[in-house]
Image 1 (cartoon, rainbow, N blue to C red):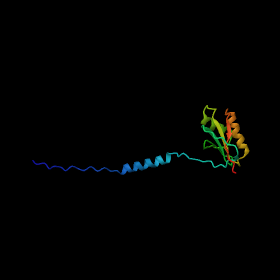
Image 2: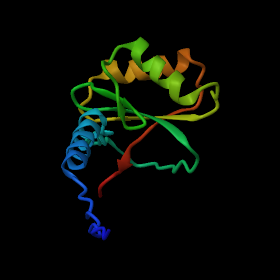
Image 3: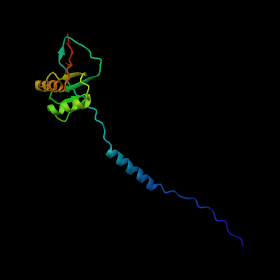
Length: 137
């Protein structure tokens, strides 16, 4: 008896479900990813004739003309004293010997500058300074 040789079947791989899964994963990662927002606070510093450059790592409290506050370029949810103190605590940890630089816009309400100074003092920071720009001549 002579048996016929069966030709091998070429297996087909159906990639359609694989492409569907890849697209679903892509959509999932795009939706679930949070993007860090880089925020630059635009302030116009007041002028001063004396200058001193601080070379060490500082804590910077930035106050814009509307009174919005940021600590080390991270915007705060509001400009209340307890929110500012909490942000300073989280960033500084237990280090209270750091320099705190207050960069306030020339048109910032005075109350917010005092609030920033008060928060730093209440937490035990004793090295405060104000950022200014060089006096134009």
